[in-house]
Amino acid sequence: MNKVIRDGKVAVLVSPGFGAGWSTWNTEHPECVFDPAVVKWVEKGKVGPVPKLAELRGWDYMYEGGAGDLIIYWLPEGSRFRIDEYDGSESLVLESEEQWITA
Image (tube, rainbow, N blue to C red; front, side, top):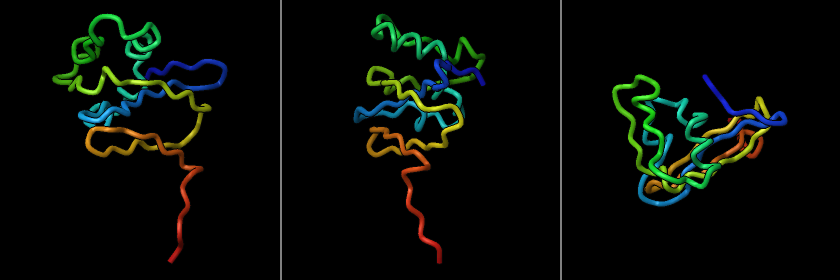
């Protein structure tokens, strides 16, 4: 899985806008959360269309909704996280932020 890593931090793509998620609406392609082509597109100001990951990666399909709202979180390498979604709005949750109760 290709990732953009700088100074020990990994670029993670999250779409916080309501309407459509990015990774949460593409569960068959979890690696889209790290995709270098999309990271580059976001960093350059989202000029032009989002990179066509289905074509670039040889996938059958990739839903591109939510791309316009993408932001990058820079997480330390090895960080465990999940991306939650409500009504298309994604949020990043670090494992270290979770509180668990044992039965």
